[in-house]
Image (cartoon, rainbow, N blue to C red; front, top):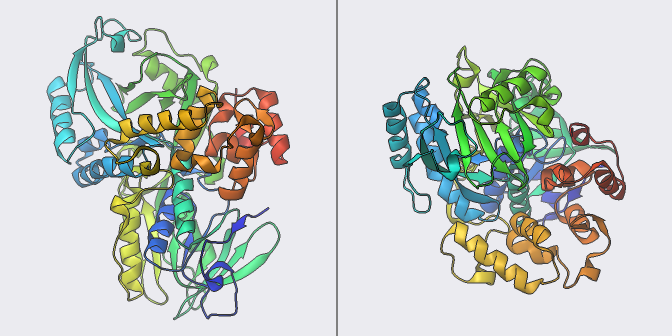
Length: 535
């Protein structure tokens, strides 16, 4: 079933595809509900454009929920001389932390030094650049530690004596997409999930677009089209979009790179992450995850075929286990994997032979041969806000009405704690002050669901919680009440158990098969794909 939520305060012509009251139903139609599409819809709506977004599945169903979940500059990209990309990403880290301190937080990374990999002087030089390419107000700089006798070395092999410790950030990637979509909707955009763009016909003045959901096809007239289809951006231009005379639109080539991750029971007790250098010159991360687990990833494997088919294979699992075992004092075995996931990075084909060397930078490609078209190529989650800002600037120019940027100092939904704690100080400490206030307001709520909900919803938590436990309805699974499920359906486009257990939260990792099935029964569906991936 398609969920179509009318925008708050938007004109009916902007919210109803095919409405006869105007020649155009919207100014801009965005195709794709990943982080770039949601971010662009948010930015455009905030500038006063009439915006609609369509996503063929759930928000963040694919690449944008399958990341390593880092807000980072990309330290290893310095080796490929991607200084502009790294600087742009480093500049965004603290901007994003301030905009959403509930779902984005600082994270310290420990890089054990293996002399057989990169020499110490090279690492020090890279980290010096990393510390100084962009201003830091919150994140501490790099330090060096002796792993022998240090808590950071307790889980590592004894021959590792020295490590470098630097800063980046962590993000709940799928929730970031949902928050961007919520903000877009609040500013007047219409969000159509589980709605595919099956045809987009261009003429001199606009686009006639056919949207298809589970029950019907509808036509929409838009002045401009933004192709933010991620791994499908190339195929969308070749197959669904058509120029004025019916021919396919010219398209760039994408390289689809599969990145897979594994989750194992918690390997260490502290709150730092590890960066391990591999003999193939790649790196993998080992990150504290969901309290009880360690997330290890990622791989870089060329994908042939449909992006939906991306799954981790046995060779990738072995690779991640073997590389992690080179550093941990207890080997990591494939039998320990409790969950895995794979995402497809849509990277611009720059003729690099090594998938790891393909640029992670993005390209915005405008086409004004007839009605405006903007295609989004590449990108990474850390730079989504900047990409969206540049895309909105470009759309404004193509429509002949440039409008001012606004997102750099704006909070995402739930990220403004001022009504709870007063003046903001630091994103990390502000969240702890906020969580303390939530405890006071909802003393009946156990600590574990309280922390989870405070992280997920931030200052919107009042929309989820009742004044007392009875007001929450039945506890469908541990720490998950009917009131929250109602909220997710009503406000966040959730229609399936997967939406709730693997994207709006990661509760699927903490529940057994029966508990997951209880949620699926409540949501009215069973046997979802993500559930089948749980070991």
